[in-house]
Every structure is written in C-alpha cells, then in structure tokens.
Length: 94
Image 1 (cartoon, rainbow, N blue to C red):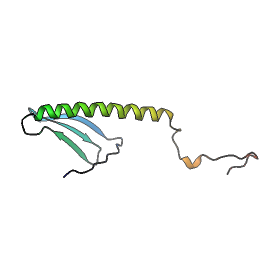
Image 2: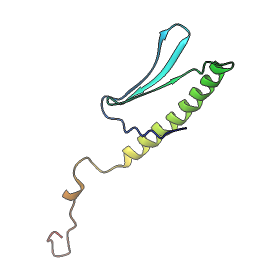
Image 3: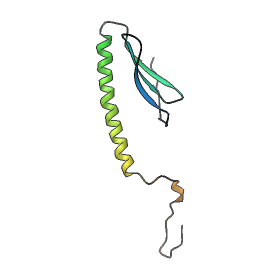
Image 4: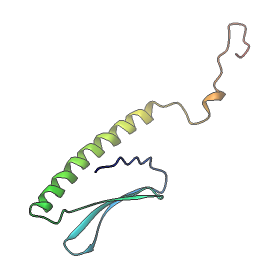
C-alpha cells in the first residue's frame, strides 16, 4: 500500500545523502517537522534501481527548481495582497 506525502519546504528544510553504515546510503529530505528517507532495496539489482531512481529524482528536482526560480522572478513584491487597491478615475480608492 502506498501513501501520499506533501512537503512544503520552510527555511529549515534540507536534503542530503547520508551513509551511517558503509555500503548503505540513504537520500534524506527533512523539512524540520518530518523526514523522508530513500534507501536501497535489499535485493538483487537494488543498487542499480536506487541509482536510476535518484537520477530521475535529480532531473525532476532541477526542473522544479528552475520553474520556481522562473515564477519567483515574475512574482509581485512581498507583502499582503489586500494592501493593493484599485484607484478609480476620481482618485478615490475602491
């Protein structure tokens, strides 16, 4: 059975490769409140499958980062949107 995990990174989020025991690497994503680890399956071909998955994840993560950068460069300046008011032709705020 699978499950869905949603992570919305905050300032303390991180991702790293760790290897607590030689020959048993893990890819760990930590958002400060929860953690997800990707490990090698303990079966024949597990290392190759994990490497392939990590490469696919890296490509997707780079595309995600590029898209976020693109959107951030076009975003409105930071601040509450309710502070933006339209002005009528008479000069009064609506």
